[in-house]
Each structure stands twice: as structure tokens, then as C-alpha cells.
Image (cartoon, rainbow, N blue to C red; front, side):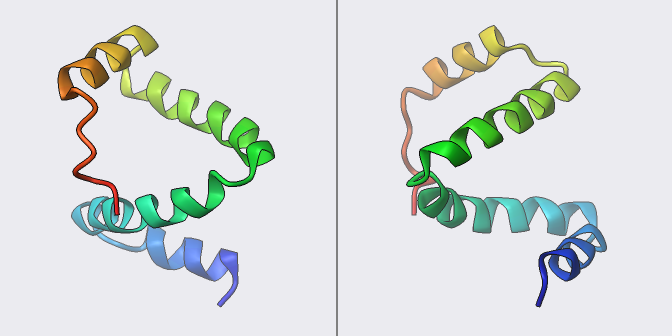
Length: 76
């Protein structure tokens, strides 16, 4: 399956299914991707764009992360 085919299939999911897909697959994919420092420089602007679209600023995100207290329960 190509990246484009995967993208089309994921985008066809219902919103709740998309959320579940993200939560279930992102930790595993991120673990592998984080081993490539160059990839982080590509990912960071994407993350900032998502954050900006959400209406949350970086300071709010940091406050949220602090409230979570470094909870690692989502790590796989």
C-alpha cells in the first residue's frame, strides 16, 4: 500500500475513527521517527501549525504539559 493510498483510507474514516487511529498509531510511529533528528525539524512546523489552528498557543500547551505532570501513560 502506498502513502497516498493510506492517506486516502485514513481521511475516509469518521472523525472518531480518525482520533482513535491517531491515538493508537502515533506513539509507535513517533518512537521510530524520533531516531532521525532531521525528521524532527520537518515535524516541528507541522506541529506548530496544528497548535495554531487549534487556537491554543505554545504557552498554553506548556501549562497543559505541566498540569499533566509528565504523565507517560500513553507511551507504548
